[in-house]
Structure formats: structure tokens, C-alpha cells
Amino acid sequence: MTQVKMAEIEWPAIIKLTENDEMLYLAHQRDWLEIACLNQHHFINTDLLLDSKGQQYSIRTAPTHENEDPIAELPVLLKQEQKLPLTDFIKWVQNHANAIGQCCIAKLAFTTISQGIDIVRSLDEQ
Image (cartoon, rainbow, N blue to C red):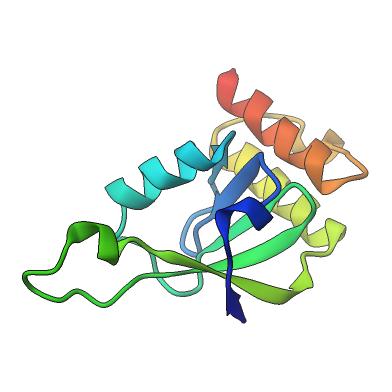
């Protein structure tokens, strides 16, 4: 895994927290920066960011050191070698819909990661 530059990420994206079926929709890089600042000490190393192309990025928190600039503590994104299979992402979206109380989750269907991310956005707007 290699640390990624923000320009490499295809927005919009989602964050998939390991211990939660709900996902966080990120329209732009600034959404990531806001969430990273607010939750910099709450991520665990198995949390993921998934971009619109299906590329997975592990979220790694920086170790906390006293008297350091707080910006240095922002999590970094590490590009994983394999893209997320569409079938896995469909399950994620169904679990997300179920967690936020949507019905008829079995009918959620899409053919690309980008379409699935758009469904997450629309579910969150309801």
C-alpha cells in the first residue's frame, strides 16, 4: 500500500467504517478533509474510503504526539492493490439502506460503483 495524493481519488466517494453498516457520502475532497479533522482520532485501521472508480483506500491514523501541529495528525489514505468487487459494494449499499431504515433493500440494483455511490447520496437525502 502506498500513500495517496488527493488528486488520485475519483470523487464522489464514501467512507465505510468497519464497525458500522452506515456509510458516509463525500461529494468532494473538502468533505474528506472536514471528516478527517473532526474524526481524526476515531478511525481504526480497517476503515476504508472507496472512490467512484472502485479503488479502496485504507484510512490510517497518525500516532499522536504531544506538542505537534494538529494538522500532522490527520489520517492518511493508503491505496490498496485490489479494487472492491461490485458484488461486495452492492451488499454494503443494501446494509447501509437497512441501517438507515429504508425498505425494499433487495431491489437496490446498480451496475457501477459510481451508481452505487449516487444511491448512497440519494438515500441520505431522504
